[in-house]
Image (cartoon, rainbow, N blue to C red; front, side):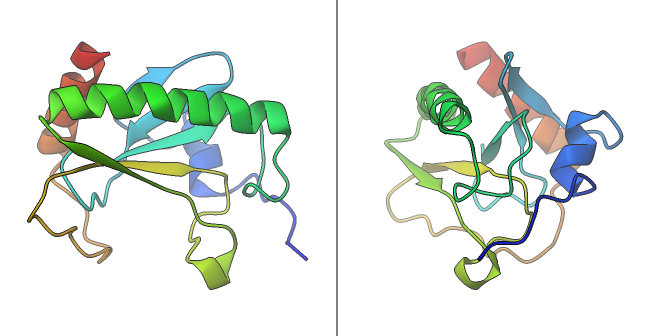
Length: 140
């Protein structure tokens, strides 16, 4: 049994403009922005605008919209970061590694032989995130 959605989660606050982010893409149903603790250059988060905790309680139309946006971001990330591959990750509930309880997909450009950075809680340099967001927007 999953918990209920808490609108005070950090992604809810980002959607309401209460916390700044480096926006990459937005449409009527989805929002994409740079992960502030990236595991690789170009690590982007794609979220629905409608509230849902994860895939277990999301409306199927929101899931379709989020994965469609993740596909767009993936293609742009491969181009912008000259990446031969893309990792898309999504976690459901704490036991599976979910930390922020607003549905989100991680879109991470991958290069052979380069390991993912650990999820350490260290924030990336804001100027670098801004540059990466600009690269992705240009590639879109």
